[in-house]
Image 1 (cartoon, rainbow, N blue to C red):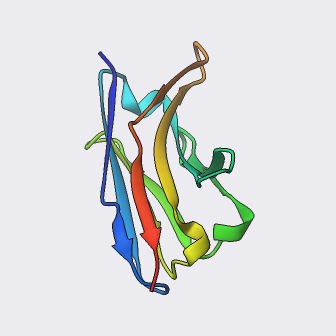
Image 2: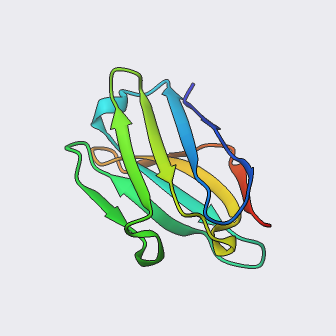
Length: 117
């Protein structure tokens, strides 16, 4: 059974930082591309950051320079370091694992991030 378990969310003030973690089980983690998506109320889910098996990354334009995605294959975990948080970053954040070989996708349950003064 595949599980992606997110942690690290919460309520912070503008300008502060958070680090999200997503621990994976039930998949060969190292061969999956990993991503963080978010969905704000009334909006569509959007890709925030992604990292390939080889470590290449890409980011949503509005988070470039503030967010960093990285992975630790030994720990089967992907992280999203979020700095200089803004109120518009408020959303539920979801971890995604995408398998290129079989085009399969797995999702975490989502974790709330709220940026508010």
